[in-house]
Length: 434
Ligand code: DOR
Ligand code: ZN
Image (cartoon, rainbow, N blue to C red; front, side, top):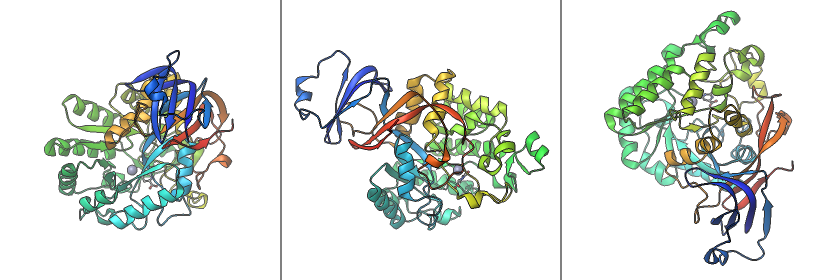
């Protein structure tokens, strides 16, 4: 379908920001035309007249399709939590045109056959692009490296043992060396399991108050420092998942200054919530790493502002209501995030932590750079586009989630700004009837 997206505020980081029109045909961006400029004749000829759809984007942000580096789609194996189809539906409703899905499924994505299965399911769903993240080690057990060559050939976009800490530093070194040769990004779930022990939330005053076992900041930063050291040793870049502590931010900032090839993501809950949220939301505020102190939250925001933290990812981690209902100590870690991330992240612009372009970059072009995939609204690129209504106010209502799960501490929160349309490969895959 040909699309003429007219009158929107185009925000294409590093390329163009301003009012303009976007023309889409044959699944590609055909032209980006600043307001008041005629369409160049050569570009106009690529476009059918009249276009099959004119999208009135006045008052909307028109951004490159958003990319979530970190989601759990749960299929195969845990379809009661989420399926690839339901997760992709949640993704496009949340404004994401592409998601990277972690390997902690059953079976684990440690074999090309599983990677191919994930991609086949994603193609059937026909919604968001899915980039499978394969395991670093067989069964996520931290002992035997997977065959990255065949995983990459099958379509794996990166490797990570996310959900399970990789404790053996020698294995991590070898993984970096082999993945580096294949230009396969390595994503680290930085956690020292010995320091976590039976911890269920942040170690601090709230845990003491509630009589719960705590997880110290050092459980994360020790491993972040190890990954930095191994990246330096091997010369291979490493991406740190879900940064939650001040010490991790400091370590990454300092490493980047020294020229270490480390990148990092955080998630909306780490820049918006603290351990206090556990009092009210219980297991729906339980995730790994846990919500930290106010000092950590502010450090994460500072890390976003100064570029220490490159991306915002959701760590969308669906769990069924009955699994979360067993009390905070026994409940599994994780919260869903795909359908709330855009609304929540726009607060960073209102709070002047990021410019609008800075925010869009952390949700699109920067994750794309880490994955080594094209992203943007320049002529000839795949037409993955997200429209956002920055003014729409609403209350987060779990009954409207397309995800199969409901585990979110943001339920009931009043927010401003919402995805309005999601376009993948030139096809409208989500359109909000505001
Ligand atoms: O909170 C989390 N949930 N952290 C992880 O590392 C894994 C994830 C999951 O798979 O549920
Ligand atoms: Zn993780």
